[in-house]
Image 1 (cartoon, helix red, strand yellow):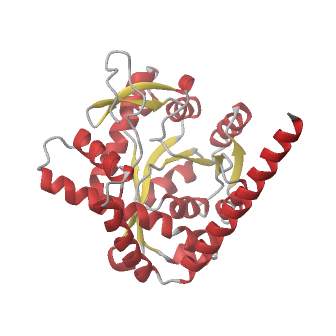
Image 2: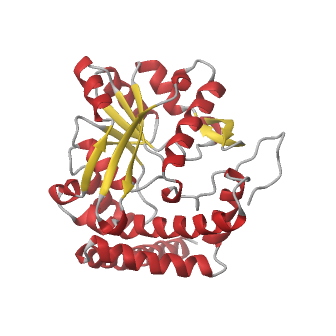
Length: 310
């Protein structure tokens, strides 16, 4: 039995090493391709993924029908195609972001809107929670907000262990502090915010069983995290919903900061979660094609609405 376990472990390590080598080589090659050409390639790959009977296409269309039931079917199909293309671009851009210098990455940002909210909070010593949905280029966004001031974020190592050093060093490139996704990490985030620092959180990830409540998201109950609202309430931090919008023809990105719904730190966890989701909706509606509709956001269902979505 022990020999079998050792064999399985060795095989797992070999597979992990091979995957790491393939992915890092591909990302390195992608980092050499100019952004405009890279996006054209991604458009071609995304169109192919859309045309084939893929799981990505199926989930995207289900999510869009759920979120926009009033939208004409032809318009929804076009939005699905654009969304898949944009998601492919998000993956292809990782070469530029993870292997590029900090100067190279920051130079991709052409305009910043709402920065006055960040500066006002920093001037008053108020902590900031950057709530960054899966919208636009969130990896690039993370590097940009790290450059604005002290930032502490939760970090969970990837399933492919060989990519850990690359991802962690990239996210820390502008000075971000990465902490574990456990109780100690949350305590560290709380202290950072209380001391006027900042953190970044992906607010539209489905949390663990004990970390969320159901709240409306585009009109349908979605299991929504309570961590962000709790942090806001405990620390009186300013919550800014933010994203890096991808510009056409590889021109770069615009970063946008939008203050959260006023109920984001409500004592009632359901009201706070509903406010969080309304804020996510607000920024998603600004650039719906750049949201990751391929994510199974409605996978977990409440008892009163147990019908599977996917």
